[in-house]
Length: 114
Length: 167
Image 1 (spheres, each protein chain N blue to C red):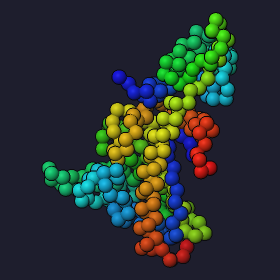
Image 2: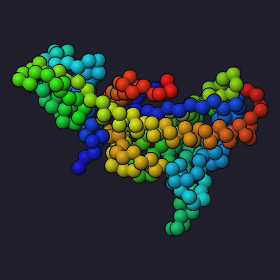
Image 3: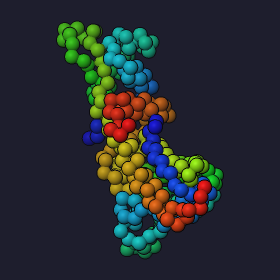
Image 4: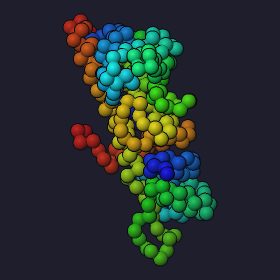
């Protein structure tokens, strides 16, 4: 079973889907707008949106239940937050290390000016 | 702040040449100890960084099976006193997987600004624990060369949605 973060990156394993994400960063859009902006066919756009939706990267905005063509798609926050959380952990690791480096180098070699 | 990278900076009150020398030559003296920071964990061990391009960053320690040596990576850029880059491979990364750490030593009025940038996390498969014991679940995965641009977008996106409390 793949982890959700794993699925996130698999879903992003396609340049066209990256473009969709990039577009939705600015604002929610309808599938037809996405197709037009990216010069993609409607079926291709639908397929990419489905994969992105299944991976949890995008979601449909609540709206007209009867007409899928006018539904807006928007980014979901959570998968992106996971990436951020990971990088925060790496930064925490290096923060500890640089703090230790500072203590060491200044206690031994501080006072040289510079 | 951008890309699939972590960046951390500190100001030290010594000149760049001292900072560079101590960062590399005395790495074992300042590198923190314990399982979060070292393969040796609580056992006694030593971290070495061999000078020059191609030099190894490795840890040596006594294991139950005898002397053990774990290489983290090779030096890629060696430009004292201003820049140092080395590979960073976790002990259980798959062959070919690596991340990269760049350390920049920039002179400042009161000493040296030391900035560490750890990049390439997107290229790491998701199903192994982090080498230094970070428990954050899945790693990032190979998704291609265009990752970098995307990650930048993601990060900006997240930063806008969740601004750090201290900024």
